[in-house]
Image 1: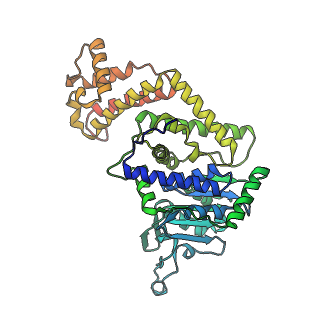
Image 2: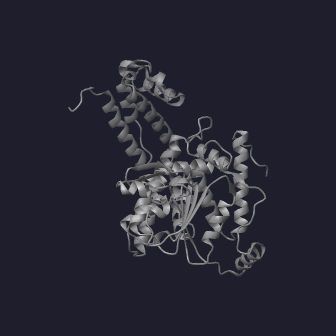
Length: 433
C-alpha cells in the first residue's frame, strides 16, 4: 500500500523521517522494548520526562544512553542518586564567597541546569529535600535557590528506579514524569536469544547509528508539537479536544473501579490537570509523526502512549475499552456533529466575552459558516428572525441552545454551561451585584 503524502513542510518532514529512523534503530538495539522506546521518543517530542522502573540489570541506563546517542549537539548530565546528596550535586557547587555573604548561589556550569538531556539513576534514593529542590527545575525549567533564579536548558530527563517510594514529595515528582514504564526481564527463549545477539555485537555498549540527529532538528519538531512554531501549526478540532478530555476522565474512573475491584490499597489513580493539558501535546506529536498537521479521532486512541504505564497490561486494556466504548457511543448517536456545533457556538460566545461591543453586532458576522447557516435556518423557521437583527442576539442564542436535545450526558452538561454563559454575557455590566 502506498504511503500517504505528507502534509508537512519539506524541512519538517525531513526531521520527522530522521526521528522515525532513530526510533527503528533503537527498537532493534533494545530487544522487545518497542512500547518503551516509542514512549521515550514521544517524551522527547513533547519535551517531557520519562520514568523507567525495573530490577537491576535490565538495561535501563543502556536504553537511556542509546537514546541520547542518537543525537548530537546536546549536553548530557548523568548522576547516581543517593540519600547523602544535596541539591548542589544537581545544580552545581555553591559559590563560597557568596555563601559567606549569606547568599546561596550555584556555579551551574556542567550541571543539570545547563544540560539538554539527563539520566538520573535510582532517583528515589535521593532524599526528599533534594527531590523537592528538583521539582521546579523539572517542570518550569528554572532553578530557584535562595536569591538565584536561572532558566534551565533541560529538554528531557530519563530517570530510573528499582522501586517506588510513595510520599507527598515523591507523588509530586512522579507527576513531573509524564511518561512511565515498568520493564520486566525477558524470559521467553526467543527474546533471550535476541538480547544475547545484541550483546555479542555491541558488548553491552551503545550501538553507533549510521547517522546522528542534530539536536536542533529535534527542537524544531518539538516546537511544532508544542505550538511554539510561528509558521507551522497542528490543528486540533474543538470536538476532538473535548472528546479527548472525556476519554481521560472515563479512563481515570474505569481504572479506579478496576483497582478497587481487586481491593488494591494505596491512593486512587489520578490524572492531574497538568497531565490533562499536556495530552494535547501528545496528540500533536502523534499527528506529526504520522506526517499530518491535523489531529484525528484515531489519534485520541493512541494517547495510551502517554497515559498508560508501559509494561502494565491492565492499564492499556482499561484505556482501550474506555476509549472504544466512548467513541462507539458518540459515533452511533451522531453526537460528534452536535458537539461540533455547540463548541463552535462556544467560540462565538468567547469572542463576545472578550469584546462586549460585539453583543450588538449581527451573529451572522461572528459565527463560522456552519453555525451561521444553522442559526440562520433555525431562527427563520422558529422565531421568524433574520440572523443579522442584532437586537435579538440574546433571544436567538438562548432559544437556539434551548432547542438542542442533548445526545449524551456530557453534551447535556455542555448545553447547561452555554446557557449560563449567554445569560452572563448579556446581563448588566455592573460589578459586585
